[in-house]
Amino acid sequence: MIQSLFGVSAPVFFGLTVLLVGGCAFMAGQAAAIAWKPAAVALLHAALLGGADRFLVYGLFGGSLWSLPGYLSHTAVLAAIALSAYRLTLARRMVAQYPWLYRRTGPFTWEERTVTGHQPAATRGAAKSTG
Image 1 (cartoon, rainbow, N blue to C red):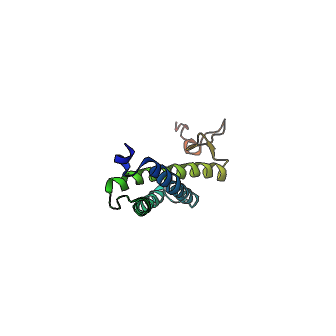
Image 2 (spheres, rainbow, N blue to C red):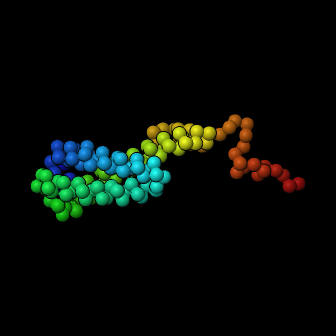
């Protein structure tokens, strides 16, 4: 199954693509979030790392260099890793840098803090009657 989907054996896929190049994708996602870049930068890095992964599969393990399904499937895995790292890092940075504005709601998410008894600035004055 792995051989037909990814174009390499399972140990090569998990060792090279997931662990080695996936670690690079994780760091690329972190770097994009730390620099406050958009998520598209992490996707661009994942696409470039997908090409490097195909070259390593070709050079070290005799895989096909110009395999479009292999490139797309490996790049999809790398993009998922990079975007996960991007979102994890962005959530951590938002809460760490702006603790008075945001609180963490999960590993990938945060929400705006609300102060009890106060209305958000956007809704102030909306309840006034003109009458």
